[in-house]
Amino acid sequence: MIYAPLALLLLTAQPSPAELERVIDAGGDEALLAQIGAIKGADYAADEKVEVARLLMAAARQEDSLALSLEIGNLAISLDETFEGRLFLARQELKANELSAAAGHLDRALALQPDDRNALMERAAIAKRVGDFVHAAALYEKAAADQEARACRELDERRFLQEVKDSNQQSSRQASKAVSRAGSGKPGKASGKASGKTSNTARPKPTVVAPAQPRTSSFQAKKPRQNTPPPAPIPVKRRRALREVTDATFVRTVQASPLPVLVLFEAPWCHPCQALNAELARLAPGYMEQLNIVSLNIETAAQTRDRQGVRSVPQLLLFIGKATPRALPTDLTQIEAELRRRFPARAAAE
Image (cartoon, rainbow, N blue to C red; front, side):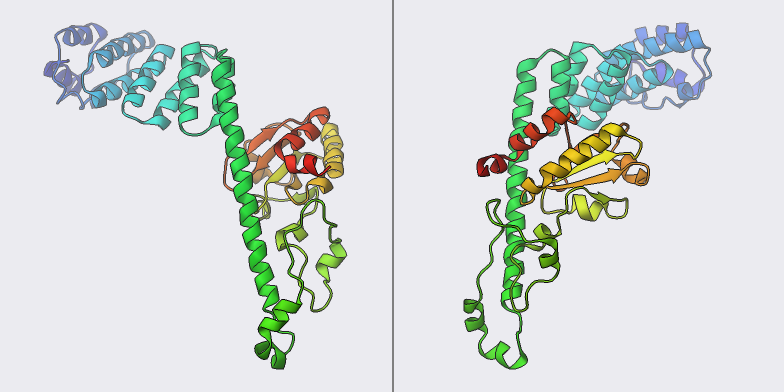
């Protein structure tokens, strides 16, 4: 606890480190301590800043009020940022259930000491709580907590499979709607109203294309036979492996797709990108009913590149609706096995 004289001192003058230490030692009144504008605007020398920050952090640790403790601690690290100060503030924010603020303090702490196990474990726990299982697993692995890392990867895998299932169900519902619309089409003004049910019964009812069924060519998809309903849902017919997306089409083609979308971020000058593009083009036809595969040129789609945080190529990101994209390996020897693992229906069909 810190007495009101400290608050008054902070309000009226720039306290020296010695003066600040005397009033802190005296105890405190937390009601006035929120008014700390004087010290915020103080112009301390470098060595005085470090000492004042140390004294303020000690006061923050002794403060009973969580809000005041955070305010004093944040003022302390604004004068002199330390690993211990960031770690203390992260734990205080966790007490207040402010996960985002706590994560921010821990990220800064790890920037100062990247290999500190306590900070890694606490940051991983926050990532796990908010559902960022991939990040949590990476942090646990760095902290040599292999069991926790495996658990997070299993959680991520279960969520991934559920998202794929939900995506397929959504695609199936859209296919059913498309079929219903096609079945209720009017072959002629006279016969449409009189024989609607008969017409629907006579038509072969299309179903969602399964991997074992023959696929419709692009020419047939564009020009179906007259009076014949489309053989597959519209999203299936539009898929083309390694079609290039741009800033203008990324949201519509990738994030709004009813199917998962694998995006290869590449550049024209990148030779590994060209090899990976060719390999994905070879594999893509086998996953047409489960996955869209497209490419994006980071030089011509800079907005999407920056928004997705892509800093090197080649990079593969798997998008499933609005969920956080997952990074996949770009090693040519691993990518086929990774696709088989994530989309087992393809392997079963073979």
